[in-house]
Each structure stands twice: as C-alpha cells, then as structure tokens.
Image (cartoon, rainbow over all chains, first blue to last red; front, top):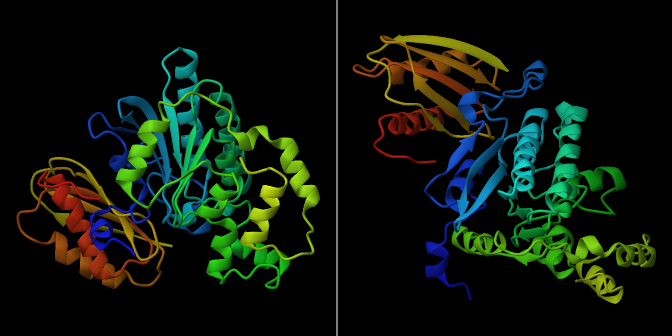
Length: 285
Length: 103
C-alpha cells in the first residue's frame, strides 16, 4: 500500500527542471551557477537548422556544498531537445570537470555530481557533440583517482547513447525506479532491429530490461533511491564523503566477457532471464 | 523558426534580472533584464511560424500596461499557448521585483 501522506509530502525530482534540481539538492547557502543563462552560451548550430535555442544550451553547472562537502553539480535539462548533448552544453560539463580535476590535483577536492537526463549526443551537432562527450569520459576517468564521481539518473528521459557510457564510468551510479539506462534507446533498437526484437511501446518490458530496479539488481548501478529530493539529498550527502573506490562493475571486465559469451542472441531476453544470467556468471556485484 | 521584435514605452529600468521556463514542448524560456530607461524591448524566437499577430496581441496586452519598469526581454518559445506565455512572463516579472523566487 502506498502511504498517501508520504506521497503528498514528497518533492519529486523527476518533475523538476534541471536548475531547480541543483537548487534543491545543494546546501541552500553558497550556491553559485557557472556560465548561467545570461551568459548566453547557446548552440551556434541549432539556428542554422531553424531550431530555437535555449540560453544555457540545456546544461546547468552549479558550484556549492552538499552536507558541507564542496561539490560541482552538472545537470542536463530533460525538456530541452530531449536532454541532448550539444557542443556547448557538452563543453560546459567537460569544463566543469576539468576545473574539478585541477582542484583535486591542487589538494582542494571538489566532488563532481552529474545529473544525467539525456538521450545522448544532439544529432543536429553530430561530431561536435560527440567530441565533448569523449572529453567528459576522459575527465571522469582522470577524476576517479582523486574523488568519487557520482552519476544520478532519475527520469523522465533516462540516460542513453554516449552519455550512458559516462554514467557507466562514474565511481557510483544512483538511479530511481523511473530511470532507464542503456546504450541505445527503445525507439532506436526498434528502428534498427524491428518491432519483434524490441517493442518501444511496451513500457513494462522496457523498464524490466533498462529500468533502474533492473540495473541495480544486475550490478550496473550501485544505489536505488525513491523519486524524492530529500531522500536523494541524504544519499548524496553520504556518498560525497565516501572513500574513493573502483566499483565492482568497472573491475569485473572478465566476468562481463564471460557473460557476453554465455548469452544466446537468438533467445528473447526478459528481465528475469537477464538477472539469472548475470547471477550465474557472477557479474552481479 | 520565426523571430519577432517588439518595443514599448516603459518606466525606469527593472531592479534585477530573472529567468522562467525552459524551451520544452508547449513551454518557453523568458529572460528578463533591466532595459534602457523608458523603453521595453521584446525579442522572440518561436518554433511556430505564421502566428505573429497572436504574439503581438499577447505581448501588447502585457507591456502596454501603465507603470511597468523597463525590461530587455528575450523569449525562446517551443509552442507555448498564449496562457502559458502570460504565466511565464508574470512569473519572471515577479522575480525581478524580488517579492518571490519560483522555478
């Protein structure tokens, strides 16, 4: 049974735009947005293709503290162009991570937190967006030696494409039940492999395979959290102070290779069969 | 995409800048900044072509009101209805007066 009073008191993360997510998650004192909307660092590519831009290119970077720990939060706006990563938005995240790396090297660690609500690269910006995503990957790996790099996927968009690799590279990944995580999104798989392979309208099937619950059960994400700002804030407050560790999913290359070898691509995967295969090959942490 | 520029007579420059909304389906982003004394300018970029008269009517009703501060307004629209346009501009204006801060 759902506790109605609890549900009414909760403040949803999924329903908030990117900037409000940062403002709600960081300690209220000392928040400072970097390269905010009034800097007007917008996409140079979208107007050439007759598409309206957003003044912050759909990425919010905010410095501040979380439970007293210095953090830099990067949030992708899910409503703008499907949370896609363009050249400018991607460069903003890469720049924030580069600053965090310089801080870590100078002995003043700032923990990066990435709120990844993104369909991946912005197709209209193609290679420019992909180049930025590659820089983000590189910096996450470099940062992991100094600080925990924390990824959060809450929904509604989920995290796909090159940015799902960024999520996979994070030291810790936090997801909600509403989150989805996958290299290709449902519509892309259906378009490429056919509706028999993957029906992008079958929501229970999609969440059973790509959903947050499944990703935690199979060890591809570390923490599950309710769609609740207070709960996520509590969890982040604890994780930003945790020791730097390489998560099991990044150390388990051989086990994942065994898992891939054991999978029969002709057999139709279900949530349950996938969980069994992960458990059988010991790929679940 | 279509762009429009509108101008109105206004009072003293607004006290501060403010932002409301996002460029998402059925929504729009409004950026308000202090304008030059006596004049409000509104620059609109919209994904919907051929509705300039509706935009002019909606924006006229807001900025021809007496006693308003001078704003430099930028609107990035992704198919918002007139009601949403009015609400987002009102939300941003409320923030420039410092009475409340919403998102």
